[in-house]
Amino acid sequence: MDKLKTRFAPSPTGHLHVGGARTALFNYLLARKSGGSFLLRIEDTDRARHDETAVAKIVDDLRWLGIEWDEGIEVGGDSGPYRQSERLEIYTEHIQRLLDAGSAYYAFDTPEELGAMRQEAVQRKETFRYVRPESFPTADDAEKAVADGRPVVVRFACPQKDVTIRDDAFGEVTMPAGQMDDFIIRKADGWPTYHLANVVDDALMGVNYVCRGQEFLGQTWRHVLLREALGMDEPRYCHLPLIMDMQGRKLSKRDGDVEVHSFRAAGYLPEALVNFIALLGWKSGDREKYTLAELVEAFTPSGIGKSNAKFDRDKLIAFNTDAAAEADADRLLAGLKDYLSLNETNLPDDEDVLRRLLRMNRGFRTFADILGKCGVLFAADDSYGFDPKAVKKVLEKNDGAGYAVLSAIRPLLAEVDWTAEALEKWLKEYCQAGSLGMGKVAQPLRVAVTGTRISPPIGETLELLGRERTLTRIERCLRQGVSGV
Ligand code: GLU
Image: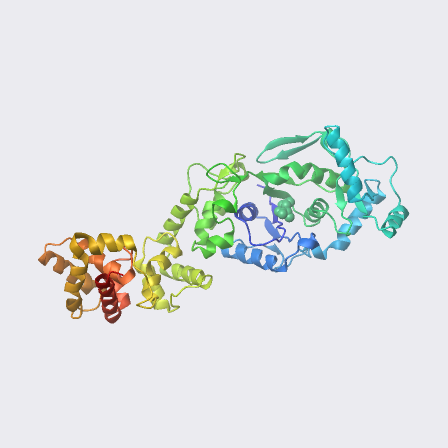
């Protein structure tokens, strides 16, 4: 494989979408695998929509995933600056070259005039295409138009010929000459459009492999023609298939999280998300489990397919459950702390307690499970409610058998050694002595101290809570039962 120089070129509008994360990951892997390099460029020429915090968010999301870049914002490099907003002069110079060569021309149509042209095309049942003037306006004409308050743009004079792209995923894709039009390369505010800036930067930054989402495939002919007009070499192209939800619709917020940051805040591990994202449009045989390092080894462009990828959230949860089960204690502690830093919770930041919670919850799916099951143990003893279904089934059924068990064991618990092991042993013996199933005692206890039927093993739950608080909670539960609240 030749050394590939790849790039990720997001337009900063907010946190990184999983689709963007996939593009970044594939570019990173292609560069690493080929011994090339990966750069991060910020495409922020749309000054009206600019959001400075979005750049920091994207950087943070990429780093959390473990995707590092060799060149680009924050790390520097030889072909910077790496923010398009700092490269206006470079674009201006290239646009001038195109103007001088007669490959581009000024146009001064007002929005109303353009609207009328579109309207006419609709009436003729044709797709609107800008009609190139017979002779191009001069720079003086353009100046005069500016003075008259007209919006002056620069359009590319598209050579009318078929353009065929050889795409690594989609194969040969041809854009017939008749469907092209003289698109805008400089807007009236003086900033270049995406097409011009993107092409100039890729060429000047030495990018030789352009890998991005399928939504750009239909635009690539513009880039091919611009490069040709500017005498720039063509890169290889690879467009990544669309990502769909399980109903076959384009992935959107409607059916859950779609931003990397949301998964982070929801308690996922980056290694699981990276593994999952890698399989959105790429595969190598039947293997599914990869670390980032293993992906670097295994990744090849030939594994990138063109059929739509499916965003299977259940699979992601399964990946996360496995990743959590395989991670060592320090890794999990760091992950849990990160999760807690992004959520307002009542969990303490004491590392010993957090380690204990991780042990108690072994087999958890996401860090949110730990909070869901154990948050109540850190709440005030009189602050949690009782799940009505649990009360009915575990406490009230059979003439209040659950309440009876709680009343019976409450004084005995005052005497038991307060360790998880001793508590489990005592519970077992108590049940054996009374020929009771473990659940008949453990479940009422669980409902009493957590309000629900779900908690980690009962011994560990009680040990963490401590004797005094356990007894207080049992008493409160019994009071509620008696008063029927
Ligand atoms: N700035 C473009 C975007 O929003 C980059 C497209 C490309 O990779 O060429 O995603």
